[in-house]
Length: 449
Image 1 (cartoon, rainbow, N blue to C red):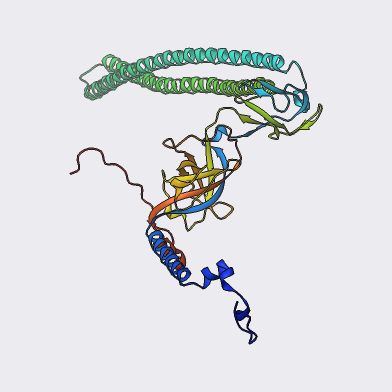
Image 2: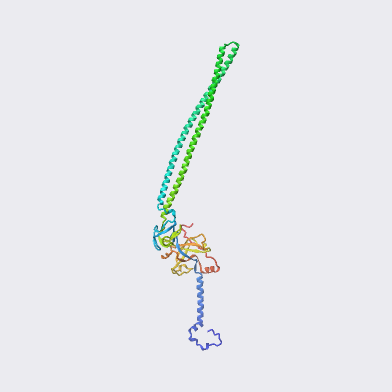
């Protein structure tokens, strides 16, 4: 009753019949309201000094801790045509189980006896390599024989040259003796001529001396002729020795050329054999790639190709499988401004999609239905979405994650930071300041110095 109008009805209303009106307009209701305001103020002040855990809220998804435990796509290493499927979607496969069989689509590999024929070609080429090796051995033997013969021939020529020089030296001595003998005979003839002119010697003595002088001259000419012949023999022996060297060097060079030519052919054949061995190994490996095998234990989630007769290219995906053994983790993304606040081992509270939870952001210990985790790894580069990727593993000190949790499920995450009063958190948010840096305190082991 506001009593605004001039036409009041208070004189016609009995207030004693209205208990609510008596309570509202009584003085006791005013005191209760004042007490209520005081109580709210006191409680609010107390709440302002309660501890508040700073946190970073972000969404994420369930993944695995190791990359080999995540769903994977099996690709075909070779191009081929699907001939047979051995599995269907939902089947469990063990490592090494056959998933599909492919046939060749390239005409180079159509031959069913490709391996045996390549092996025969390689064996024949290996035999030719052995023949070249034998030829090289024979040529080396021939080279050694020619080198030995050259050594003997050169030694023989040197001996002959030495004999020629000794003979020339002997002829030279005889020539010098003949010169001396002729000089003596000439002197004697001159003296005899003088004595004959004076009449002291007879004509017979004079003529005998002339004959001796002519014989000495003839002996001198003969000795000179022999000495010159010996000189020619020395020159001829030197020429012959040089011809021996040239001849054998030419023959040995020809043999070396044959050896090098044979070695070149041998190495070329060995290279061909090695190449054929590589091709044989590749053909053998390729024959095993006709069967697509499971790389690990898992469940077939989807077949990318279906039916028989479809052609797939090299490296194209064929089937997807989900491994059976895996360790779950949570993948979440944070803003670049929040990355400096994080470190390895930091605590995280997780809420999984499908599991009901009552969450109090500032009081994680009072939350219901959340699970513990800790930061396991952080990417050092910015992702395509403009955020940094964080990997969280289960916290072993907290209760275990749900057994029915599956890969790819969504999560709502709270990365726990520092504990501060409520009034400080309100003041920080009003001023737009970032959260405090979180530092994980480690227990010191041993004696503090």
